[in-house]
Length: 282
Image (cartoon, rainbow, N blue to C red; front, side, top):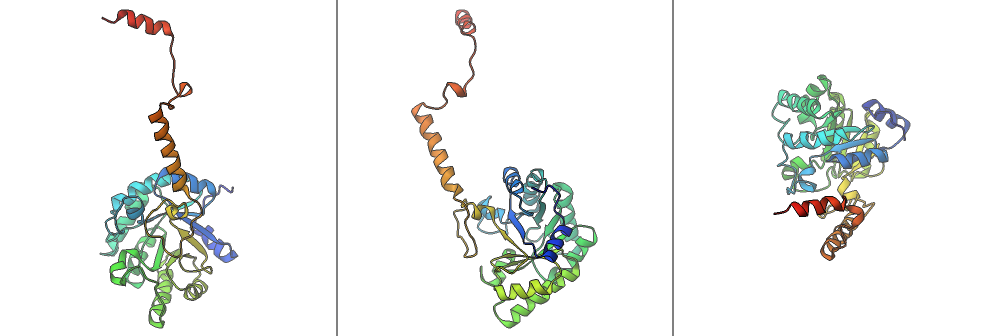
C-alpha cells in the first residue's frame, strides 16, 4: 500500500484523473488503524457518533468536546488517510468568528487535517473564514442531519426544480468560498451527476448515486455493527456483529464451565515458594 499521506491535492488529482475517492467513518483508535491499514483515502469522524457510539437519537446533542475527544483518538491511529472532523450543531452557525474558533480548536487539539460543515450559502462566510485561516473545509449538502427538523425528516433532497437549483447554487457557492470538496447526501443521482460535472472540487456521495467523485458510508453500517435503522443507500459488507456475539457467548460459556483460563493462559511459580508460605501462615 502506498504510504504517502492523502491531502486535498491528492483528492483533486483523483477527481481530475477519474479515480474514485473512498471515505469511511471512524470514531476510535482501533477502527482508525484498521480502515487506514485497509487503504481508505479519507476518514470522517462524523457527528453520527452521537447515534452509533453515544446512543443519542440524533446528532444534535453532540458537543465540540465530544468531537475533539473522538477525533484525537482517530488521528493517533492514522498514518496515510486524511482525517476530517465534523463541526457539530451550533458550533459554527452563530458567526464567522465562532466557526473559526471551533475549527481552530479541532485542528489544534486533534491533529486532524480538515473539518466538515453542513449547509450552503448560509455558511459561506464561515467557510471563507476557516479556509482563510488555513484550515481545509469539506462541505455537506442535501440531507443535512443537523437540519433534519427543518427539512421535515430524513428525506431525499432536490427532487423538484427549485430545490435542485438551490443545491447546485449552494455547491458552487461552497466551491467559491474555498471548500475543497462537498458531500452530497440523499440527492437524486442525475442531480448529483450534474453537480459533480459543474464543480472543479470533488463530490463525495452518500445515497447520491454512482457518478460522484467518491463515496462515504458509516463504518458500523458497512460492518453490520449498528442495530438501528439502515437507510436504503447502505450496503453491508460484513456481519461483524454476528461474529462478535459468537465470541462473547463462547467466552461466557467457557468461564462458566471452568474451561477458561487454562494452564496456558496463566503463570506458574516454584512449588517450594508456596510451601514456604504455607509454613509461615499463622
